[in-house]
Image (cartoon, rainbow, N blue to C red; front, side, top):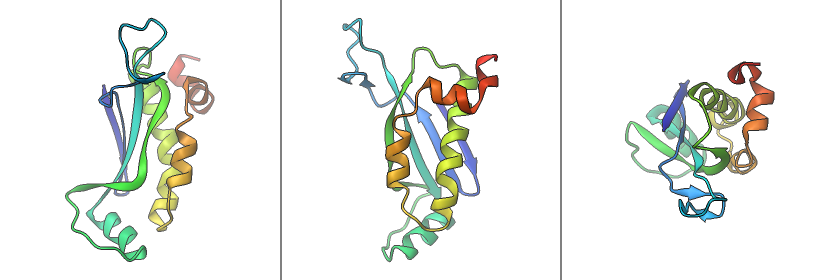
Length: 132
């Protein structure tokens, strides 16, 4: 699974390519384990250059470059999430990270907090994604 949302030069993606599970690396032989989704925050060249010039660092980004300390595993199961729920999770993450990132602030602590995102948080944010 791979879903993403782009707003104002900020891209948030949600994917199951990380191989992470509830107990570390996903173990399909463990009946109590399941694959988890990871989110990543990237910025386009214009945003990345603004963000990094504010931090006084240098570098030449590709079209999309990862934002420092903005890739975390969530508590969202890759096995049970629907595309609508994944898109709602992306909207929730974007709502939290976009403004601070565009103003040049670190989003590390925000992303650390978002690593606890689970289906209950997504349901509270967007009940319509669950048919409620």
